[in-house]
Length: 161
Image (cartoon, rainbow, N blue to C red):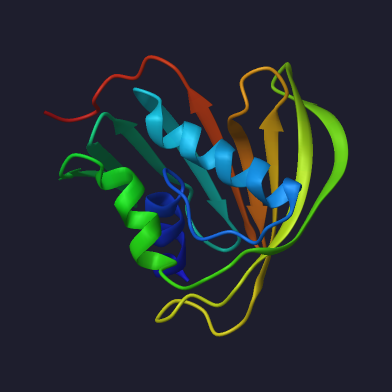
């Protein structure tokens, strides 16, 4: 299960191949925008596990697992490449707007979608929900079975050199 969480940390900054609906394209655009912001933080709350945290600053990812930070430097465009590699031939389906909600004071539209199985990580499709800011078009939260990821965009400080 921890490998799925780490993959979600890495995936969140880029975009897979998406099905053709307007909602799917909107969700794709949100993740592409996230890959382009200078920095963001994710808090991953997973049932039965300690919370994980990741910070992306440029093409450097910092991941905190079990209280220990690690650093991963990526090549230019690395945040986008990770998602493309994980979802090389996948397509997201069943994209639909579910509700309008505020999340941490940000007006957001909630979308549901289905992510196909990811080779080596999961053997079944995953139902996911994402909160996309109405003003900034960025994902601010993503939920999937047993996991909640909160995303904060803005100035971030590297937790380790």
